[in-house]
Length: 410
Image (cartoon, rainbow, N blue to C red):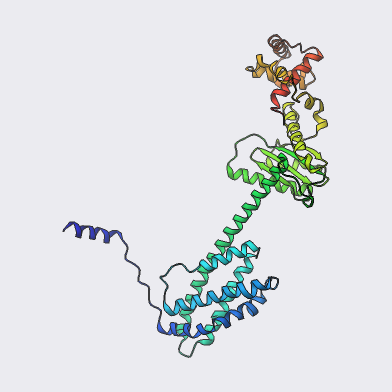
């Protein structure tokens, strides 16, 4: 065996021979050919009579029904009949035109059930025309044509459905991103609310913080959808949101107050431990300031050890003021630098201040002996120079904790 013959043998062993396609019988071709001259007539019958019986079709614009849908019907009829007559079944994909129309219908908002029903109704009209054209003795040809028609309908409906859903998904993603860009612009002050948007007047701005913990992308999308649904249901209107796996911010257009049970609803959606703050904005231009205030309220409430839930500015009024940045903020925050590497001391200090400097309550919460609490507080005072037994020393310690824990100013 030569190299050439060996290569040929190897190629024949790895390459499957083409599957022969049976030719279309002459009787089938003849029956299809007799219907070809009726293409325009059948297309009019579809678009003006058969489709008019479909729910929702009558509401479509006249140019869509009389021009575009009629043209699609003509194309489908002629394509099917000519393929049968000329037997080009091994040719290229023939669904391109239907895909273009499906994308167009999706963009126009035509319901998918109506779109698919027009294709099914069109196949039924064509089948009736084939039956009428069949002559005695052509029953077998008619049955074979029915098989061709079912195959073609399956191929077209599959292509139309796939394209329509892809286009809908693309449009939804585009609208979602436009919406997020608008909300981001409103919150950051780079977008000015238009007069007719409902956002130029009063609104309620929310900051939401979810419990810590890694979330997979699927879980993030799920929790974001749940938060959106919970907010829309709680306020009885569409809430503009900008959420991710850690939480985010939301704008409730119009005058609004947080409804009872809002924190519980969001906890059900985002998990136990959800924190949120609500700050009203009298005008759209005040939304950025309200958003920054709400975010800082949440951070201060967390730093102070307040239970999770809904926080108002009045709930953390003193702590909020102490946490505000000023010329002396860095120096105040630095007072705790000597104990920055001692988390047990910082935890003791924070708990002691939260418990109104009650050493026994602090010991109980930390499961320590009161004497241990005293020893730790004395160590803090020795390292930082703060006299925690005086109002000034306690206030400085509280301010230092808040400035460190609440982070940079919003």
